[in-house]
Length: 121
Image 1 (cartoon, rainbow, N blue to C red):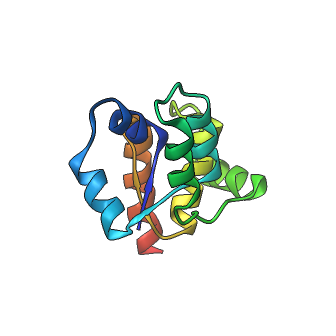
Image 2: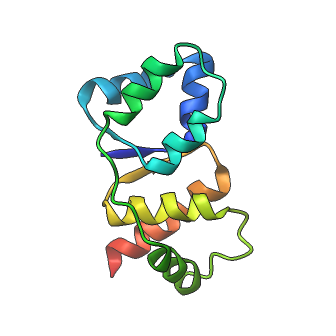
């Protein structure tokens, strides 16, 4: 499964993305309540239909604030240029054993680093 970040969805809404379309058709996409929340704040055509699609996707495991705090402190994520919502999405992708697809370069780099660290432990 692939946890799709807000940045990818925004690109999809603006110009489409054949890979995301394929993953959706294969049932390989999951989402997170914070991604849905962020997208609720975007001006989207066919808003209700799109949000309904998102809300019917499988949800990633939602990390608690304590789990996110642990991830931040244990991996020294402070000062790395990601926000708290990003840290939640990152923690959820790890806890769900899913890939994280994001267009945010800093978040993508941390995801790649932590994915390999997580798999070697």
